[in-house]
Length: 318
Ligand code: CP
Image 1 (cartoon, rainbow, N blue to C red):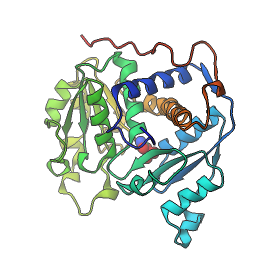
Image 2: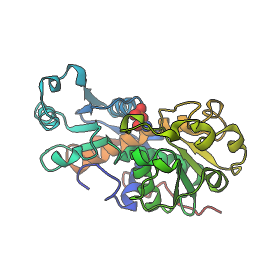
Image 3: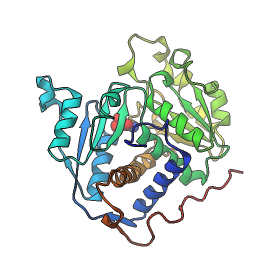
Image 4: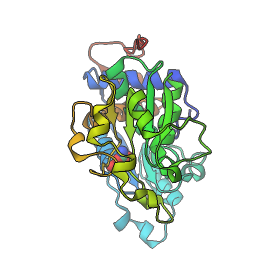
């Protein structure tokens, strides 16, 4: 793995190493001591991902260079590639990029001399989201083996669905999709279940927002969506006792989830966001190490040896 662009080519061991490092940061065991600059290049709106990268960077002591598409030279016609090269030239050590194109990384990945971290690519990849979802699930169950994880909603237009299905399958979970028929994607080889089957079988129910901005035509499935495909109060009552609810955010209250359930006992929605900081600290550190921008002696370790035994001791569910 050169840049951090996709779950597709990650091994289970690489995923677990990142989850381990995130835990170390969460437990305040690591600290970065070298000055590093990052550029957060967000060409699509973001609250959670952008802000948690900024918090992750600040906690690592990384100086984030400000960038806003509205007042950047992209307004004068500068391309994504030239913008990225500009940040590399002026001293950014790592680029964090979100862009509406599925394949924005293709024109950059072989031409950049600093690591790129994918903060969201169109409807294709959102690898740091799947890491934070994985660590949230791990914290709950201590394992992925045999867990039934149902991803519910606008599968067709969701990068979260794609990255999570890949990552959670690699980690040993059984991944299913559910949603309105015109939100399904036949190119994705995961079993589909009905919402009511999903409610009964899921250990983890991951709800997705309808990605209106990626729809090219009106979908009648969006009418009375909560009643037909959302998590209603009645459906929540039928879930397994231990089942949890995830949502990558932003949440459309009353659409994919009843507003009263956003902070219900099963909801781990805000915990996911907190975990986002730690996994992004781990991804940034790993990339900077891999590219030789920092070295192990730049990481102050408090209570443990770097690269030691993983904290993640997998155990089987049931
Ligand atoms: N989950 C997620 O990517 O949220 P933002 O779009 O707010 O970053």
